[in-house]
Image (cartoon, rainbow, N blue to C red; front, side, top):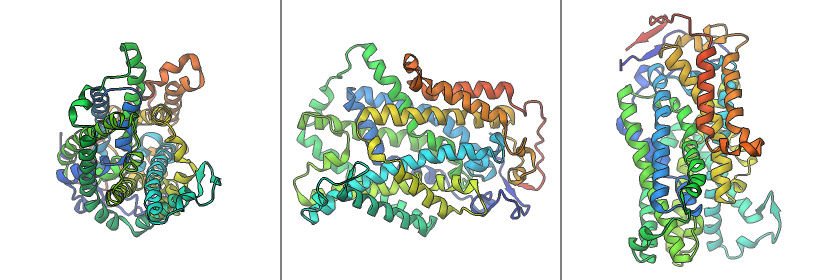
Length: 490
């Protein structure tokens, strides 16, 4: 693959589509190497939802081998669109919402960006709830009676004490975000290895309690027969793909800092599948062990750590959950939606303001209801949004790779009257392809007799939108020049 990298050397600051946060990264600022991208994935994948997803498969009846196969296959599949969407970020130094302007239009890109941002807000809320729950146990251990304050009083299904610690944790996140990217970077540098160490400690403890690996490996699947297994496997695979479907879209937000295509691709190819497999394996083993030790598969790490009787071990365990939730939330679930919301109104919404909007929506989604049971987490949350994001991924991949052969006019991405303005800022073909793809992916949620289609939501959404856009796209007969004026080639 040719190593071409472009930067914008024309002043577009007067454009309504431009601000400093959305501007293309300058060549001298593209410093991330293979290690940086591997480390990025280590930091993002070592999170409580990774553990929760793996553990929920055990809770749904899979044995350890079936769960590990499902997660590994899902991550290898999602790595493909991840690498395809990484390319424009490294080549042009642009973030996801700016990249989406090429296919959806300068205004239509807001549709894709907001849909993706709302999903990230959901993840932000989930991690905030998990971190708040861990903080609740910590505070309750230090202040006897705290857990029972307010009696039976509830706020949207949360007890008063849970609501208080949820908001405290949320406020800590907002403070870190407000301090900016440099503070976020420093926090991530020490958080990732600490979480991994604490996870290994938890693993060692539960294996000892289960009397070694033998009972774990021999624990049978509760899904008897191929038909019963497939009913759980297909939606679980779709949910696994959906787990990183958000990042497969907005990965340009990170690859815009890459030294080269080769380095970002190598780093991601190593970091995503390997880290997810290792950490998911830990979640699978721990959840399987709880079924042996306690007679019930406990897929929520907060419940597992609550079983610690040693106060020091209890404190360390919940401190690890708090740090893990902070780490992934700030890196994976705040940076990208902050850019997405900024893209909606570049002159008025900054990166920091976008982060605050993310936090507020994360509360309104009420994430504790999503985590109420494993089937809701896998089938409803992950399955539903993976169909939506699969359609968006299909359109931007088809436009960039099939229609434009990876050639973009960088300045026009910031020009309200340029090539990507289409008609009134919207590419109607992209929007139609999105609507058809999402409808096809989620029709099973509306029509019970077609519920089986929803099990394949990501695949259905991707296939429908890709085919529609490839047939009717408005740029297939336009010759796109490799000579792009106003830009420097490296």
